[in-house]
Image (cartoon, rainbow, N blue to C red):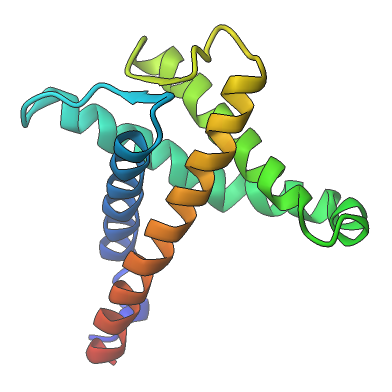
Amino acid sequence: MCVEERPVLDLLIRIVINAIALVVAAQLIPDIHLKIGPMGVEWLKIAAIALVFALVNTYIKPIVKMLSFPITVLTLGLVAFLINAALFLLVAWVADLLFPGILKIAGFPPKLDGNAVIAAILGSIVISIVSTVLGLVDFGRRAILR
């Protein structure tokens, strides 16, 4: 069975990678607060947030990146940090709608200020690094299965 026949397994692995990246960002960035309780319901909520994060990155991020391409070229790619931060804030907003209070980025939601944007930028950088490293490990798994 080749990798192309395992889309559900690949989606589950992406969700786990996103969940780990969110937890690491919450541990490293002081203004990102993720309610992490004992195993059980809280971890299922984190998995749901990771699913939302995966959906945002899969469907919304490519559209936003395409629309912002001219600005990205003018800023030599620096606007990508703001795009990632904005999408991370979007995930926090959706998470607050689903599970109030589980994910806060410097008081957002409801308070959006400079601290929230800076924390979101730093958090998105941490999440990108962790996701990339864990994605490389996942790539090794997929290479073995081929």
